Image 1 (cartoon, rainbow, N blue to C red):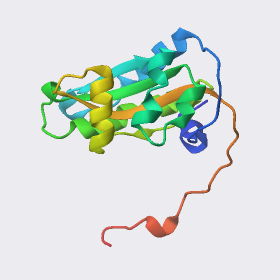
Image 2 (cartoon, helix red, strand yellow):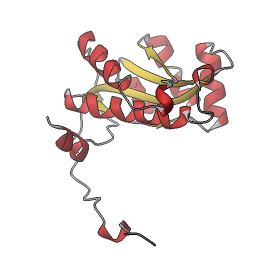
Image 3 (cartoon, rainbow, N blue to C red):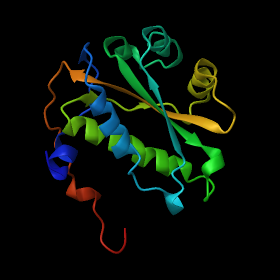
Image 4 (cartoon, helix red, strand yellow):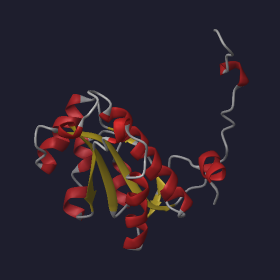
Length: 169
């Protein structure tokens, strides 16, 4: 799948066929995440791979929109490492770019994902900090369930020329 096709056909998947997928796909997805652009090349991201059922089952208690985690065997928690910041505050953009690369690379590999927002919701951040025993300088940013899709979604036709402005508003 080429890049344009991946961008235009990726959808948020919330229904999965619970099954394992090869670990080399996970490695490829994480490699793509770490090739995301970052401010001053600070690469202020960290990743926690969650694949223990006991831990996965606790996530919906922390994140109100994470019920689909019950149907996957892997969730990626993207975190910002405040100690790696070269440019204060830009860890958010770094983690956003890494998250998008995870979504696109998983889709290109035939997997489904959904971006579950964590940051800046304090209750979600605090719950995940406790669950994963995160140090103070690590900020949970996004949760991404990864698995084989059990739903088909159509193209929502999002292109809107009325949102394009040239040289002024």
